[in-house]
Picture 1 (cartoon, helix red, strand yellow):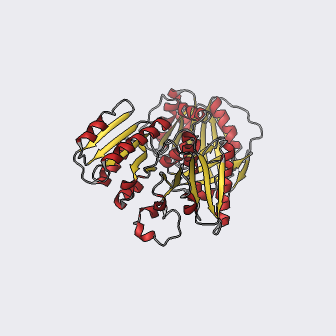
Picture 2 (picture 1 turned 180 degrees about the horizontal axis):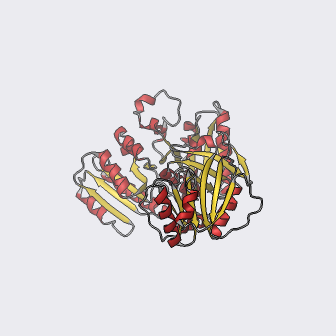
Picture 3 (picture 1 turned 45 degrees about the horizontal axis):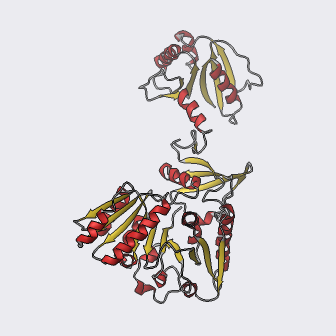
Length: 468
């Protein structure tokens, strides 16, 4: 049996003793010193021994400290009496662990004394009641936010998403509370509105996950970033294409209402440079790089420096394998422009593959479609992997109900790429995975519709990184 000494004086100490009496453990014996006796109902006499005396009296406290205590807990109101009590304990027990309830007036340099700040405890508890602030476990783990609970709001991008479709890297959903009942997570479990999720993971990662769960439509390009980047390499893109790309990027910039950065590398045409410079205003930044060296290194620096959430490039640039790899490593969405007019687009087309990637990027797809006023069309090739696809379609159907968005599911008996080629006013949305970074030659005989994205190269396409 472990002996614990509690020195109590005041309401907090009295309340603490009552809570201790309600705890599960029977492994501890508590010796309680009170300056004035307080009667406790239903106290267990086998676990509690009470003494009434002034702990600032060294003589009286010394007699009690002849026993071997594992620790001392001090819950007293007066800072002066706390200091004198600690001095008395240290006179007899040099290294005994002491836990002190501190109202903010005490300081400590003793490694075996831990001050528990009452102001921080109260402020932390009040924070738990604020809306849109994550609840973090204070008394579990290291208490730095590695355990968090998040209420999933109606309209969250996580609603009706299967847990198996959520990439949980450096974090994990360990429990779901629904209607005040615990539900253990599984890959096929679907998140519903007002679910309370218990998350465990790296505190920095959990903060990002929290923002993603609370994110609602109308925020794109967030959470990837806050600004748009039109990237032009004049060694690759010709003069006419540059002007068309700028016009389309400006149109997109006005739709998303975020700042546009126009980055020009390898400048070689004075007229084009003058035209680009003339576009500068409060919402458009022009950055001309006269010393272009390593494209990937400079590109990744720009993504970070300008906090880019959407990269806009021409199809000539995206066809370059080295450029695609740089875009993939940046882990931001990429809008690849074609020669078709952007302002006439009506539909966002997607090909349902035999994986769950389309479900993983569903929040971004709905956000883009909402802001650009696109209809959503999903092309389901009916000859393969229908069980996996049905789960994805269920997810999109539920989101469509939540966001009042119509979805058209096209059942394709033939290759859906050929079917999309018959359309005019559409943009293709697809996951941006590593397999898209390989050379086109390696996918000539593939049946993977994502690898064959370049078969629809004459259409605008948005490549969305798979995350969360």
